[in-house]
Length: 428
Image (tube, rainbow, N blue to C red):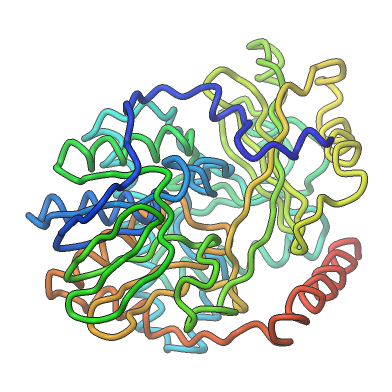
């Protein structure tokens, strides 16, 4: 058995700092203003925002709070989307794209505000590097910096070369990088648990191990579980990669992608200073990118690789270990203590998919690896829309989305083929 096979094991699970107590499964009948499905950042954020507005809320989670990507990811807190803003401009125009960019920056601020307001112990730290792997990346990153300053009034990006770059990441692997001061990283599971705790304290009834098995449309709507049901005026769907046919209209709009992570043993202060001396997070500029950061106890948390067919890529452990060895020879002999994987949801154009079905079913999904901050904003925007102020939610919902081509049987093989193409391009 591979070390990546256990769905529950991760360093995050072994370093939980937020005590929640038990959230029993739903039994029998419940009535609420809003039923939220999904206990990740999207669902917990929506539940918290709605409860603070005076709505009664029941939150249903199929497993444990933070079981999905919200509790297993790289923990990057970034403005922007999983796609370039040029994608949004092409679909909606420059003015709408600027509004969406501004809201993505709000998502980062909202994350920081919640960490402070609710005293969430999640090791929030600031500073992020977008690293070039080859010369064409340098040109692309510089063009991106210029465009964001010119078209989006965003001065938060600084190009680093040579010693200026080595002051932040001590490796010879990158010819240059963009430093982003308004981005950062945190412990994603503790953050998600902190949101759930705040939602509980605001009056949300949370039920773990309560998978939604059916949504009966109507006014009110009804959400069934194995042992109960919730009748609610509104339903919020925050299941992301785990929608699994619950809403047929959304089938094929996102694809599940497995990503893989490892955590070393804690580094000494001297070792950490020879890896990421300023405690920045980093991702490279490849299409199938790698990313890493230091944890609060100075472990190197490293992620990358991808699988779309549910099978672990061959040679995964060896390949990931070799990447760390090439980047940081100083870590020779440092043990890898944890290995885990998790599923994210991607859309065809990598832009998030927000929308409503009928008058009372709202959803947000498909963050495409860019969801830790944006999912928190999605929860706020859905709460605003339910409260009758839908303009900001509608700005995101206006993005057109198509199903992945190929139908149920060919979508995954076609996506695998496309990914192989981009992996080959990454090597050129």
